[in-house]
Image 1 (cartoon, rainbow, N blue to C red):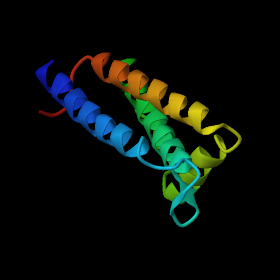
Image 2 (cartoon, helix red, strand yellow):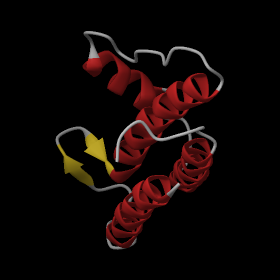
Image 3 (cartoon, one colour):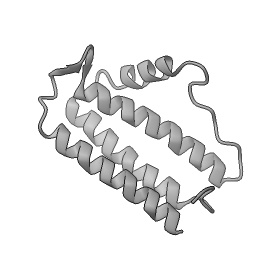
Image 4 (cartoon, rainbow, N blue to C red):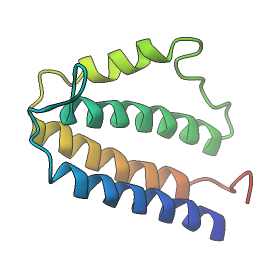
Amino acid sequence: MESKEKLIGFLEESHQNIEKLVSQVNPNLEIYPGWTISAILAHFTGWDRAVIASLNALAAGGVPSVVAEGDHDLHNQTSVSEREALSFEQVYQDWQNTHRQLKIAIRDLPCLLYT
């Protein structure tokens, strides 16, 4: 139990740091070639959802899925393109919701595999 909460604490600290940075950046500004803050949050959301799916499978006694086996760039591109038509506010809210779901998925694990 303690290691789950410790992991969630690390995730929460990281999330809060990103929130602070996001509030300081113009959402339309390209901060990396071809990437706005919306694209980066969409990227984070896509990976978090993949982790959630794997954790949920593990919690149900199944085998965690392998995301983007051999092609991480395709997964990244898909995560961003799936959210391209959304406003910054919608992408931000999706990222927030997915963060909450990730914490729930961690807490729902019967045990943490390492300490």
